[in-house]
Image 1 (spheres, rainbow, N blue to C red):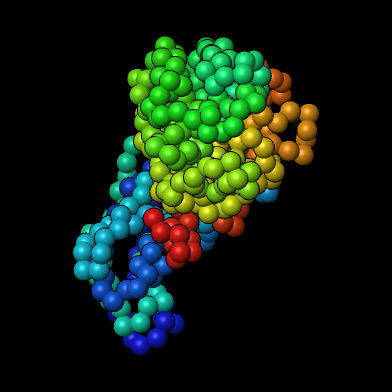
Image 2: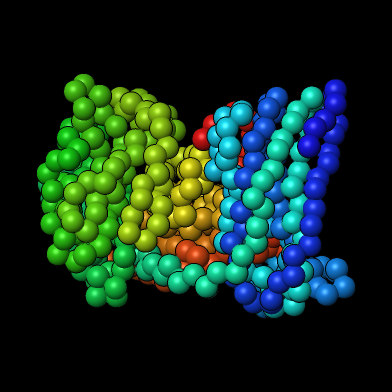
Length: 391
């Protein structure tokens, strides 16, 4: 496929493939291109589900939550992901897809668009039946506690031990603790509560992670040389620190307290899926959660002192991720932040209503959210994200 001069070109190759309703399929299409400035926008593959007459079909069940609750969504086009690769290299689009029950045909469309004097070559295009993938169920939990006892940083971690144990009895895979928990209620300055990572607090939580066989995310203050960072630390069931996230967006108070901002948005592999982290003020800025989603985060954990809960819903629904927040805000303040789990529609699946409690819920990371009129929105994020948001 080739284009001429100008960016107005839109063209595609298509074919129809018979399918069985309810069956799972693996889509694959290899491609190589030249003179394509933005391949994520200009080289696109999509699959459209149709009935025996070539008409669009719907999914089987109405939406349980979200803006289209109760509406049976139309099966919008699916957008397989591109593995990437530089100009001249071969890469591939692929995805595992489930055909709606009413589908009898799949229309495959391969695009070249919005690129001047560009060329793309396609090869090995297939849509093959596969067994239904096993669910990836994970139990997400959050702690709701103000650690008021004691005036020293080391007094704070033990106050979460009972909540971590409670989460374990309910078979949690991950529990999120609040922001800067060794600083809360000490009366000290932030830099006075900072410690190395790994350090005393991560060692304490590491022992609990091993004991209860779960992941723990703790909000701490990290010291590295003269620099102090507001961090979220992910600790694995083997007791080791998998990684940390240094808060990028700092409010005025933290800047004046001498906190140094982070620069990166790391995403970490766990035994159940990919986890990203953000901290408090990050939630006011859509770029943080979007950067994590672009890198494949399926769950974003959020130690948060306080925030507008509408922003929690927005970060979850605009990225089709689960957001798990842990806050110091009293649940009676209905206009401010909660300790809870948000779904792909931005709705709250579970919330801790009283101090010293956890919220927990089970989700299937292999279950896609299909929005009415927008389809699997998360699959379209890579193509439509701003060019300034690099992967």
